[in-house]
Amino acid sequence: MKHLFDSLFSPRRRALVAALVGGLTTTLAVAQAPATGAPIRIGMIEGLSGPIANTGDAVFRNLVWATERVNARGGVKLPGGNRPLVIERFDSKGQTDEALSALRSAIDKGVTIVAQGNSSAAASALIDAINKHNERDTARQVLFLNYSAVDPVLTNEKCSFWHFRFDAHADMRMKALMSVLREDGQLKNIYLIGQDYSFGQAVLREARSQLAAQRPDVTIVGDELHPMARVKDFLPYAAKIKASGAQAVLTGNWGNDLTLLVKAARESGFEGSFYTFYGNALGAPAAMGDAGIGKVIAVADWFPNVPTPESEAFYKSFRERFPSPADDYVHMRMQLLVEALAQAIERAGAAGPVNAATIAAQLEKADVTLAGQRARMRAADHQFQQSLAVAVMDRQGAPGVKFDVEGSGYGFRVIRNLSPQQAELPHTCTMQRP
Image (cartoon, rainbow, N blue to C red; front, side):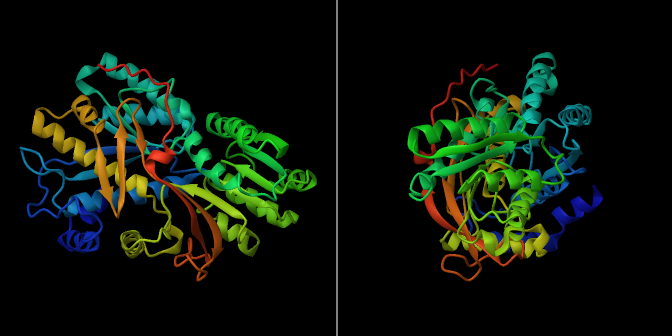
């Protein structure tokens, strides 16, 4: 961890990040006092090896950059002195059982705040394990921050006082995507495909429901699930998509399962559109190339080409921090997660002892702004409420596409914005509080 501490706390780094942060937010100011207290440790449980390791490394960069911003302004301000935030890595290898093992390792090392997201199945298991642990061991209770696991059940039937989701769940994302799809008057046939686990199943289930309600004239000509992170050759799937006569594909695939799918579709000669949850990163634009211009649609909480000066400054500062095109994977929600956590810890400290329970009580009230993006936590189900955007792929330099993705020469032009109020959906959570 020495290299991480050096990276986070060197005077040069603090000065650089403080300069970059200037103007990103009007609600947070750079502090004069440095963070000198014991670090507040956040255990990131993620696949850092195996077929989805690139997604875990990308998350790590985001969370480290977010903590650097907090530490640059003096760290988390507590009555006993300012304390820095530090991210510690725990490798789940992309497996649920390994995620549970990583949780036990984190707890054994004294970590009381964990973060995970790149698997709803793993998130579900972590929620169950943390609920049981916190009931048994009240002296070492653990807080769970979820940045990407978007199965709606996690903040509905499985909602937990200890779990907070900072990404829009799958039904919210589908609602935003459908606001564009329903206006595609040429669309008559669509193919649904997804990863065969809880999230992928939830995406296709909601796709069927919303298509029936909003575009009953569209025929679903394919509806299938495939093993997650195990398919090396998607050409057989692409051949079925092309043979079906589909004019579009709707998928929640992410990571290599998305990149390989769109690459195979291009190679098979499929000329239809892709309505995606994650088609704007991790190799998908480069894999599609010119064939994706005007045809790959993605939904996200934020895009680099959001047309505001604050957004542009935010993205430029990330690219200065991580100049390699391979590292071009920044998510506003992960930055807001760390801002919300810092806010909650400071408020908990002002009120008394700081522990997982007191932080959670304050995190329920989180209301943060960064780079012009404001979001709040809904206390009733711990679902973050934020704006959503839908964007379409185009060549860099086209109107609305100042920035490309991963040096590919292709970027995403925002075509629809949903306010937090427009993106919000009702919940079925009955929160049990300690």
